[in-house]
Amino acid sequence: MKKDTVNQKIKLLYFQYRDFLFPCFIMLICIVLFTVVVIPQIQEVISLENQLAANRDKLEILQKNFQQITGLDDQTVNNDFTLTTTALPLQRDPVAILNTISHAANLTNISLKDYNFEVGKVTSKTTTSVQPVQLNLFVKGDLGNIQKFVHQLLNGFPLASVDTIDITGTASAKLQVAFYSQPFVSPSFDAKEPLQLLNTNDNAMLNQLTAWKTSSQ
Amino acid sequence: MQQERTLQLFKRIAMGFLLVTSGSSLLLFILTLSPALPSLKQQENNVMTNLSFTQGKVAKYLLVKNRLTLITGILKNRYPLESVVATLLQQIPDDVSLNALSVSNKTLSMNLSSDSVLSLNTALNNITALMNNNKIIKKMVLQGISANQGSTSYVLTIKGDLL
Image (cartoon, rainbow over all chains, first blue to last red; front, side, top):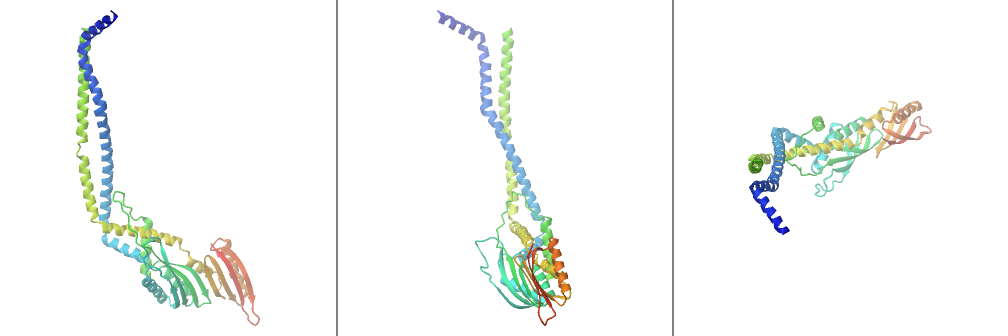
């Protein structure tokens, strides 16, 4: 009896509101579609925009790098390369070292009594660090000329350092000199990263090296 | 009557929902089809291709930069032996002779001689002043001052640690 009453009430409500069912169904479908389709689409568009922005930045960097590279003068780059690799050779170069020593001795009126050095491996595949070649030089000349000789060595190529000096009397000295070299290191260049141009310090160093090269000739 | 108006409102809302959902979906779909990304990729590839023609130049340029950094490091760490010796020699008066000078591993050994003790004293004072002014010399030891019988010259020996 009670069940019949409930069924009758439901039927009554159905007949009263059945016209609302279709719009409600449409609204429900729209909400479901919005959640399932449109929201992911929004996320996709946002991600696409981010990707576009990143690509635009990347392209900007690439174009800037290309402009900077093409703006570099080939001759200047070659000259700088020669200058820096002469100052700091890619491998131990005994001939260049001997030339530097004899050139410095000639310029400063120093006579070389004796010298000995151990070159070791001319090229090394295992090490990429700066490799000094140690030399013991026994030179003859007055104090002033010995000083000039040291100056000449320190301001010549390949780069050297005088680590020890033993002056005996005013006519001779024993010097321990190190000549530097550094093996070739493959340059790592990521075109998508901004190219590091030579800064003020680099240019100042290039000028100094050029001045040393000119003065030692 | 009231129900009729409510129904109309529901229908309009449902239509609105339908339009908004389908419209926004279509619009977003069109946005995802934007040709900007492929075009950017194409431009990127073009620039990369152009850059590949300048690889040699780039490699040289980067090597120059690398060498300059290394050279700066070497020169920065190089002991200024030339100026140390020059400064030490400047402290010696003209009538004092340098018998021996050794600078090695930041240690100094100096042997001076002169006929005048006063001049040797001047040299000693000058070198001491360097130490007191924190220039070149960190620590100094006067090894001795000697004179030989039959000789008029005096010999001064100094040892020290360099800065």
